[in-house]
Length: 344
Image (cartoon, rainbow, N blue to C red; front, side, top):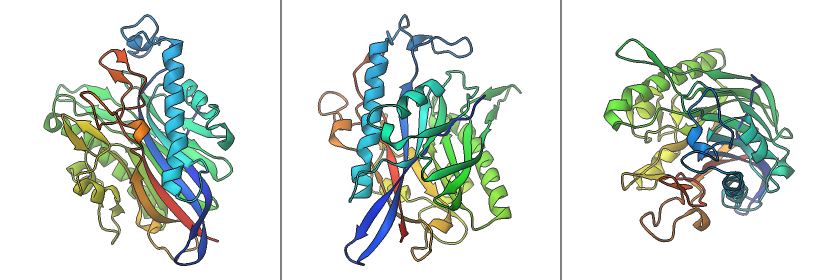
């Protein structure tokens, strides 16, 4: 299988008017694209409803509309993330994409083509055939290695069930060695408490891999992003992954914790806002006086054109599907981002 990377990092210029300084900017994005399949039936996965003859009537016309919408969201996010320019992101992590063909179409879309994105992707053993991926601009990020960390969930009946892999990517970001993880943890189907053990298991696997790197090089810069199907305060993230709201000690720093405490979310779940989509950083991004990139800000890209303005979903992300009906929307999730700066 050929690897595919899906993280978005934008590098440009940012002028700080207060400090009279000029910085390089790097935007990192994560987006759950909501069931972004191709139109071809698979012999390996349960994707028949996302085919022209399937229940959703997933035609080429629907696919192209979905592609245009996802590309528009990714191209538009940079204006909010960078403030001073609109250079396309350097790294983009994606969830709920079916395969490399979908990623290839995204990278070649007219709104994104100028970035010359490459990608990393592995076909997971998820029964629905949806994966994660990383997009990156080769001008700013140089790939060293990547790996799909398989998440095999132990079951009470002593059988195992595969879910989406955790994608690990190592490379040079403008000369700095970094590690990136793309996640899409098990859903809350059947209830949050009933399914919690699966997310705790995924969190433990991720934490073990991160710790193995930090034991070798405790100064390593790490980015963890994904749809965790848990909020920043849930046990899987706050206790197992040890990602919290304070940038102290050796814990991971979760800038989305503060947004969640304010009641801000990335999707509506059972008529309440949740913040499942997050980008988490290791401590070595925090020091603003370092020579390399440092963490500057984070946000949720909840632009008006991505938001429902009427009906039962008013105020929510403009989803692609209402049941089996395509609504020409974007996703039931908002994208999230962090902006990194680096002094000249």
